[in-house]
Length: 191
Ligand SMILES: Nc1ncnc2c1ncn2[C@@H]1O[C@H](COP(=O)(O)OP(=O)(O)OP(=O)(O)O)[C@@H](O)[C@H]1O
Image 1 (cartoon, rainbow, N blue to C red):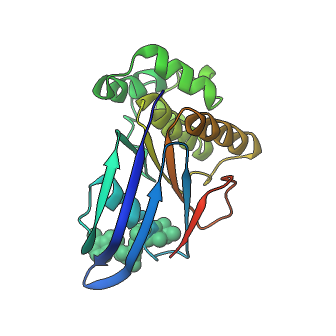
Image 2: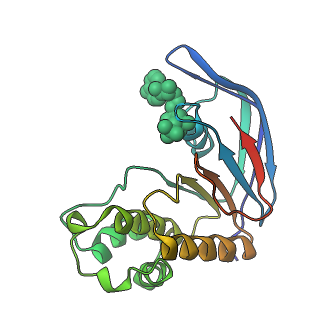
Image 3: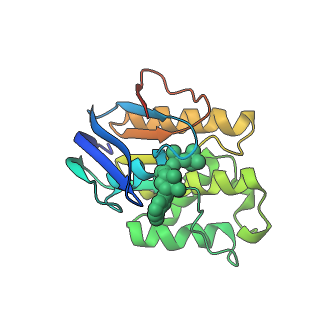
């Protein structure tokens, strides 16, 4: 079981002297999810970075139980390497094995791309690879920035199944999206 939980209390975000949001509260127990919505530039990615500990909140506090994986817009994969090795680099850091990478690639429908260099990937294949990196990480808290961007219908279904399995195992998910995203029972945070 890969558990996680998180709590935000009175969180505020300042960027470039501009207050993006304040007074944000959220509590997610194992298995729960939140959907952060709002137009471009409202601060969705900034909120995920605050939860990940990459950005300091201007006010409030964040408490996270479990390891965190942030699937951001930037893939963070070595373009020169075949997919399995590019993901294997991160799996090594995360303490996950090659079997986790292989299973995550199958989960996102990119198993056959294991030997293909990342630089050749299409937009949707790249998105699937980023999500596979999160799945392989073994982290309890998934932070997904626009996870549906670039995915086709099959990709969206695989994402939905991966998120459901993660939640069923006690993980939590915070997804930021300016488009509708199917996240059953999620708390909606509209920025
Ligand atoms: N390093 C920075 N310094 C100053 N301002 C920044 C910085 N990074 C982002 N911003 C600003 O913060 C605001 C929120 O950006 P953020 O990426 O969090 O929004 P978002 O809701 O995720 O947008 P999108 O839907 O376009 O991804 C934007 O106006 C952006 O220009």
